[in-house]
Image (cartoon, rainbow, N blue to C red; front, top):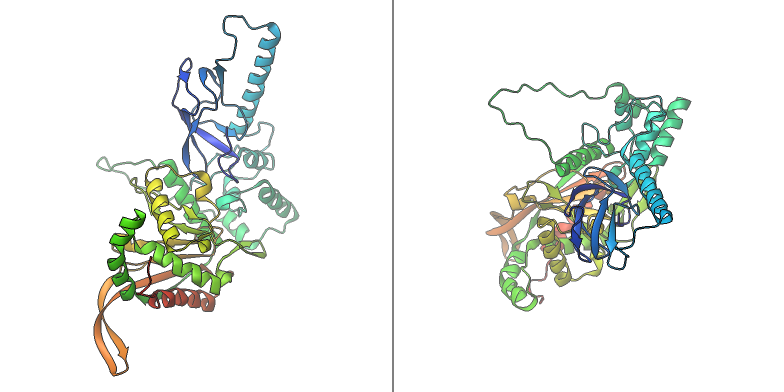
Length: 428
C-alpha cells in the first residue's frame, strides 16, 4: 500500500482492476483505493504477472503493507521453487494475512462490544481506536462523543486514551458526559411502497460525519457584508479574453476574491489559526480551501497551498486546475489537506448568501453570494446619486471559541474593502 499523503496511514481497497494471471505493465493501474481524503487508482511499481491478491475488496490496509504478489520478468519461472523459497513466501503471506486481519477486525480479547468501523453518522474509526474501545468497554455513543485531534477530526490513539483516563478518574467534561447520557437516537422514518430508498455513498457519509462533527466542535457565528463588485465586474469583462489568449485560462471571480481574502488574512492573522485543546495554533502558511460541487452532487474541498505566494495569474491557474481535476476525480490526497481557511461559492447556484459550516480544524469559512445588479447610493463630490451597481454578499462563519464578533466582522469587512478598492486599471 503506497503512501498517499502526509497524514494518510491506511487505505480501503475498493476494487481490483486486474485479475490473478493478468499481465501488468509498469505504472499501469491495478487497484482502486479509498482513503479518508480521496479515492485514487494505484499503479504497479513493476511489470509482470499478477500471481496473488492479498487484500480483498473492502479490506483496510496500512501504508507499507503488501496487497498482492507480482511475478516480474526477472523471476525464474521454469524452475520449481525450492522448499526454502516456499517457506519464505508462506511466511510473507502469513505476515500479510495477520496484518490485514488486525487492520480489518477489532480485538477479540476485550470485554466490550465491537465498535463498527463507521458509526451511524459516518464517522470513521481506525482499527487501533476500535480495539481500545472494545478493551475499555467504551460504547459507540461514548466514542461518538470523543473529540478528535487527528486529520479531519478523526479520533487518535492519544484522544481515546485521554478519554479513558478521564472516564476512570471521574473528571469527564460535563458536555461530553451529557452527550453520552443523551446520545441522539435516530427518529423513526415512515416508508411507503412509493418511496425511493437511496443508500448514501461513501463520500456522502464522510461529508455528513464531518458536518455534524464541526457543529459539535465549534460554536458557529456568521457575519454578513455586502461588497460593491462593480469595478471588478467591468475589469473582468475587459480582461477575460486577454487572459484566455495569453494564459489559456478562463478568468472567473474566484481567484480575484481569493486574492482579497489572502490580503485580509495578512491584516488579521488570527483568522488563520487552529484550535488544539487549550492552545491556539497560528499557522505560518496561508492555504486556501475552495469548495467544489461534484457531478455526483457531493462536495470536495481541494486546497491552494501557499496562496499568499501566488499572483492573480497563479491563483487563476490553480483554481481552474483544482476545480477541473476535482470534477474528474483526479485529485491527489495531499491536495485535500492542510487548508487554513476555506471559500465556498454559493452564488454559483443563484444563492445570495449562506451560513457555511467550518471545515475543521480551521476557524473560518467565507461564502460568496451571487453578484446582482442593484440600485445604490453613490457618493460624489457633487452629492449623492442613485446608480446601478454590482453587489455581492459575503457570509463569514467563524469559530466563536477563538474568534469574537469584532475580529470576525472586521475580517469580512476588510475582504469587502479590498474588493471595492480593486484597481480597475491594472494589467494581467
